Figure 1 (tube, rainbow, N blue to C red):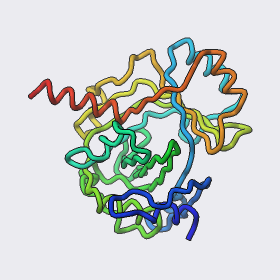
Figure 2: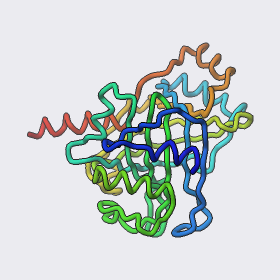
Figure 3: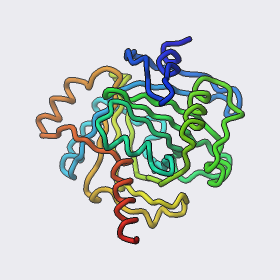
Length: 268
């Protein structure tokens, strides 16, 4: 049993973790069933979020070539379908002070076509540290994701995700999509930086809703995320301090839910 397996399999009946000694790891499982050559991924990292105005974004973006290069997806529009129970048990955890939160989403880079690879992601956050398990799947039409079937998979990540599905029985509740620029550190290999803009959401689970999405932020605001396994590079910390850019608490998932509830109250 790996560190990751030990960490995630010791649950009580409520789905909470009994074994919470945090370990630093990145672990990969080779996929052999549905998408040869790709990997099942389980990542651990700290995440910091920042809201930038146009001037701050322009300044940071000019610095990027000095310390980071585009990742494999580079510039893309990311689509995420978020799952939850009928009474939104998972989303409501975002509003309390629980040290343990979890969510399930289906992610694609661009609007997927039949046969494209999409990613089922189980993300957990414990005491400020995020853990993400990522399962590549073949897109076979939007209706297939109302009844997720992992029977073709046989590995640790799929069994962990399947436990989640059996326990919560979640359904697709809303979509989020946004334009992202993503970079990996050149010298600091565990460092990743992303910029999201034009963030939109809709309660209809339909990729054709792109033109009808509701905005989450002003069009001149960027969400910057720094993702690291250990610590943010010191030179970048100094630059952010000089520019008066400080971490914020921001959740696209949480804000979309708040907007969803507000719209439902208006139409009652």
